[in-house]
Length: 284
Ligand SMILES: CC(C)(COP(=O)(O)OP(=O)(O)OC[C@H]1O[C@@H](n2cnc3c(N)ncnc32)[C@H](O)[C@@H]1OP(=O)(O)O)[C@@H](O)C(=O)NCCC(=O)NCCS
Image (cartoon, rainbow, N blue to C red):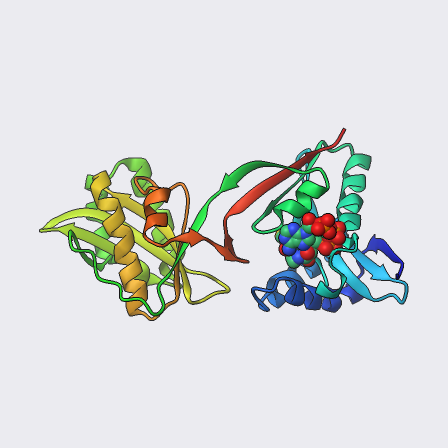
């Protein structure tokens, strides 16, 4: 059995770290950009929350990227090369961030995880909150447009008239969502009509890594009964565009999680879109 030790990360570790991430997160090999960038940026700022584990030959086999926020240390990414799973290396990395947090007088270590809940529980973390993210796989399915309403693209010129039917806060959130997706996805903003009356707005956003995933960015319906049709207007548009998944992060006004599950929606497990179990360990 080899010996392993934890040390602070160095700039020459970044490529090894990226390789480990791409192999450890089995669902994807697309983490090179986000992980490489975060590591390089944090190293430039001193890198005091970056840890790696190396074996006795100096080969990096695991890493943890953390940060400090208020009185809490946060774990952003943790991964161990699959050949070394179950040998306690993940636990060494958790201890390293805990010890540093204790030295700095912080009160807890926190993280959000989709799949590794039992790993954190083994080391004394507790689940304090769950944020559901449901996903519908639409590839290969026949998706019909919603019957109850008619959908058409939401144009810049429509926005002023919406100010008259929406409350101020809803309208400002709509503007913020519309303009934040305007550059990349103007075609994923839809207006919903019942006859001649506007009954809602729905806006989707293509995921930055999974371009075939559209996530619900904004939904407004004048009455609760239109909300599901609005969502399915976005699902239909996505299927017409040949995309693969639609994702919804809860809570969404007037959309019921159980109702979506009955329609085949499942917990998201893509690295950029997942049901998040918030784990916390209080430091005594
Ligand atoms: C989660 C991970 C970091 C654990 O590293 P590790 O070195 O195997 O961890 P340890 O050996 O210290 O602990 C192993 C324990 O964690 C749990 N565990 C390990 N991998 C797990 C996984 N993928 N999902 C859930 N629990 C897991 C098991 O309870 C295991 O206990 P056991 O050996 O008694 O069965 C590693 O499996 C990994 O890199 N996974 C892929 C990336 C990932 O999921 N990162 C965390 C989510 S952000």
